[in-house]
Every structure is written in structure tokens, then in C-alpha cells.
Image (cartoon, rainbow, N blue to C red):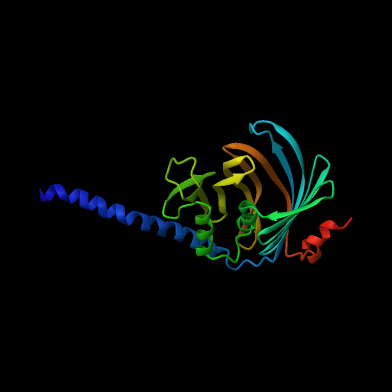
Length: 251
């Protein structure tokens, strides 16, 4: 009888300890990456890129255009975009967003979570591991679940998913490149959807920091947008006026 009780007790002890061990694995991977880029100094960023929009079936290109993104870390972002001859400007300051459409009309609202999180994905400097994990938890990613996988032949720590999980919020963290994929559930205009952002074709940017020159956005596993970066410049000090919402109302 005693022998019969040993295995259940051992399994219970292992099971109770596993979440904490996995949480430690996730924290260790994030802390190692944060330490790697801790000396990088970036105050602003300017990205010029092409974008391709796809049909909701994910198979057919429907339009394309050009985009310039300007970041003044940590709270200000400006996106100038021209698609099929229609120019739009979007300013994000903290949790507020202003949009000037092609017809000159300006609207204001709350910035969506993907918009606010983009800066931290592209330029993950001056962040603590605890801050990143807390941000991911707020988006439904469990940091007590993790495993080691591979992306493009490189080892990654997958945080938030077990091996084989396909439709749960998770982060794929490369020890050198940082986040190379993040899957979350987001409330989009057409309802809750699984949003999958993959970052690839990394090139050195400054110091130990790499930058992804290819970014793909999938919704429910179907390709929606492809961004192809042409150039990236850092610490060029864009004028503060570019981030002033009042400038959107100028003729």
C-alpha cells in the first residue's frame, strides 16, 4: 500500500513545482535578452518601408503603398502612409491616437493595444524583464508555460504555449534578436481575432540590437499585411512639431 502511494505523491510534487520552474525559465530568457541590449542608446527611430495588403483569404494582393514611421521614445509615434495614392497620417501619444485621412478630416480616439506595443517590439531598450512579462500577461500570454523551440534553425524560448499549441497567445523569444513572433487575441472591428505578428530578416542596427526587415501580420492564420523595410535611421532627432496633433489640422 505504501508503495502504491509513492508514485502519485511524487507526480503531485513535480506537478506543483512545474509552473514555478517554467516561470523561472521564461524570466531567465527575458532577463538574458534585456541584459544583452541594456547598453543600447536610442532616443528616436525613423523607418521607411513598403507595405502590401492582402485579401482576407490571405492569398491575393489587393493593394500596396509606402510608409514612414517615426518614433520618439518612449511615448510618441507618427505614421505617414500612402496607399493607392491616398495619404494618411496617424499620431500616437501615450494611449491616444489622432488620424488625418486623405480627405483632410481628423479623428481622435484611444490607441489600440497592438499600436502601443509596437514600439517595444521593434526597439526593446530601456525595459525591465518584469515590465515585458507584465505587458505580455496583460495580453493573455502565460509566463508559467514555456518550452524551447526553433525558428529558422535558431533556438527560441516559446513563452505562453506548450509544444504543439497553435491558437493560444504566446511569444517566441530569440536570445539575440528578441521577439521574432507574438500571437495575441485582439478585438478588431470584425470581432475578436487571433493576431499573429512575425518578425524576420534581422540585421544589425546598433551595438547588440538587431532590427527585423520583414514583418508579417496574420489574422486567424491568414496573411493580412506584409511590411518590407527599406531603411532604418536612429537618433536623428525628428522635430517635435511632427508629433503635435495640432499639425494635423494645418492645410
